[in-house]
Length: 113
Image (cartoon, rainbow, N blue to C red):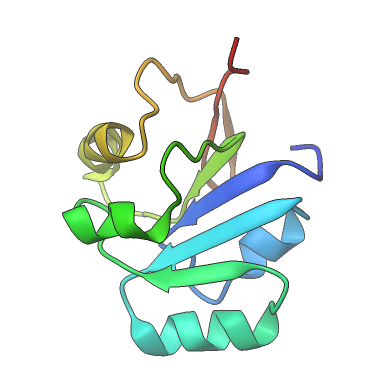
């Protein structure tokens, strides 16, 4: 993945993967407040929030109409596909197709146009 893209990291853990891709604008979401606090301390130039990816609270972590070039998923379970479908409804990224795998699942979103 090329650097300087808008990236959303779901289940971001301590934010290391998000920081490693060098986003122009990066948002990390995790369900654990303590992990999010650590992620923010380690990566002050990125934004982090506490939310469950498949809940309505997840939407509150974004500005209205916000879009991303990539979404990183750090979800090792077999429920990933179902979470991806639910997430696509919340983040307005329907018609998006997974295009790459980088240690976790990486979804590249097509250019708006």
